[in-house]
Every structure is written in C-alpha cells, then in structure tokens.
Length: 263
Ligand SMILES: Nc1nc2c(ncn2[C@@H]2O[C@H](COP(=O)(O)OP(=O)(O)OP(=O)(O)O)[C@@H](O)[C@H]2O)c(=O)[nH]1
Ligand SMILES: [Mg+2]
Image 1 (tube, rainbow, N blue to C red):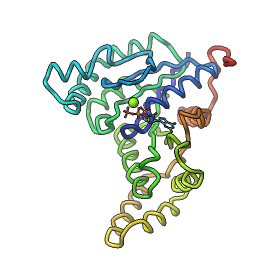
Image 2 (image 1 turned 135 degrees about the vertical axis):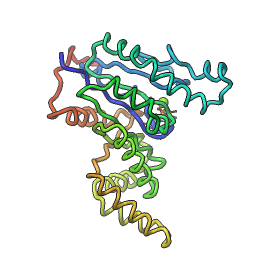
Image 3 (image 1 turned 90 degrees about the vertical axis):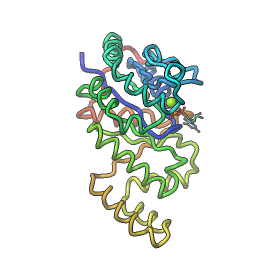
Image 4 (image 1 turned 60 degrees about the vertical axis):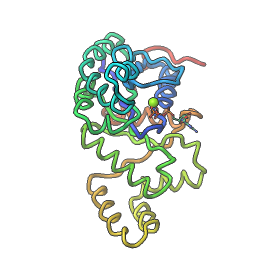
C-alpha cells in the first residue's frame, strides 16, 4: 500500500484550521478516500467534531494548568514538549488506522508550532515521503497589503523551519466580497501588484523597509498560488486535494479505497 498523504494544518489563531480539517475530511470520505484526523491541540474545546486520534488522550491543557499552576499560554508551551514525548504513541495509532490521508490539526498559537524544537521533533516523527503543510491565510489579516505580507513572512518561517512542501490556502473566502477576493488573489499571483499595494498603503518613512522586506520574500522563492476555500460553504476542497497530490509527487490521483458515497 502507498504511504498515506500527511498534511499539517497551520495558521494564525482562529484562521479556520479545525473547520477546514473537518470539511476536508468529509470531502475525502465522500470522494471515497479514508482519512484519519489527528488533533494535536491539547487545548481544543468548543467543537462537537471528534478527531480519530486525539492528543488530549495523553496531554490535556487543563490538567497541566492545574498540576503546574500555569496559565493557558505557559501550559501550551509545557504541553508542546509533553506532546513530543508522546509522539510515537500517536504515530502508532496513525499507522494502525492505515488510511489514505492523515490530516493533522495543530494548536492555535502558531508560534508553538513554528518556533519550538518540540514541533520539529513531532513533524519529523509523523512525516513520510508524502507530507505537506497547509498554511491558512486568515482573510481578516490577509485583506490588507501589510497583513498579507506579514502572513507571507510567517508562512516562509514555517517553510524554512520544516522544509516540507507548502500548500497555501485563503480560508473563509466566503467572508470576503468578490472585489476583496480578487484583490487578495492578485497579490499572490502577481508580486508586482502586491508591491504596488504595499507601497501605496505605507507612509513614506516606512516604504523603504517594506520594499526591502518584500524583495527578501521574493528572493526566497516563487509565491505559490493562494487557493480560496471555505469550510462553511464547502468550496475549494477539490482544488486543495489536487494541490496536495501535486506536491506529493507527480499529481497522480489516488485510487479511492472505497466507492465514493452519494450523500
Ligand atoms: N465565514 C466563515 N467562517 C469560518 C470558516 N471556517 C471557520 N470559520 C469561523 O472562524 C472561527 C475559527 O474557526 P476554527 O476552525 O476554530 O479556527 P482554528 O484556526 O482552528 O482556531 P484555533 O484552533 O482556536 O486557533 C470560528 O468562529 C468559525 O466558525 C469559513 O469557511 N467561513
Ligand atoms: Mg483549532
């Protein structure tokens, strides 16, 4: 059997990771693929969506707060290291389920995922040859040129850290007007348009800094297209699937492991 496709979902707090994982796992199952959903957020709450594998079985934020007298942020930092110690249990549980796709939801505080050594150990343990990171652009930030550039930098940080192929998603695209959507996608497709928008939006003393930052980003590699998606409306899921298949190698479609459902 081919190795499963493993996708990590990351992005700023509230970007829509958990909702997207849910919508995409449902799309995969309807299309006839098996998907294992792994929750790596020890503080996940307020969702009725049940992951197949849940880090909270091993590491729970509320317990860490009580046990060590920490606040929610300190507990997240402690939890990140504890998760790394349990990651081979998670890996074993993933392997036992033998699915086509493994979707990994990461904690809301992106700096825990992007900056800490523990997450590098976690990603190394769970990744195979067919792995990618989906980076979700939150439209609440991405709709301004400055916010868009900041997200590009964060995305580049994640790529630099993990050295995995990236698939960039504009989440919650239903929350943008058609004009805003068109503007944001043009920034990802045409660096020159973004450059114009950044300089037009920035008061003169800072313009130089923005320009240089922008050049640095541009020199890091081509800006990959940003896929508009909406978990709410179920749009952009098939293009996302195809983008993942492309980065896993060759863009070949997987054979569905069971007949597509007609729901
Ligand atoms: N309009 C719209 N809202 C969405 C969509 N997806 C998620 N949301 C809303 O965005 C908020 C955050 O969604 P989550 O899926 O919890 O985001 P997250 O990135 O997992 O959040 P954290 O794990 O807390 O960082 C919720 O209020 C969702 O209802 C979408 O496609 N469209
Ligand atoms: Mg979440």
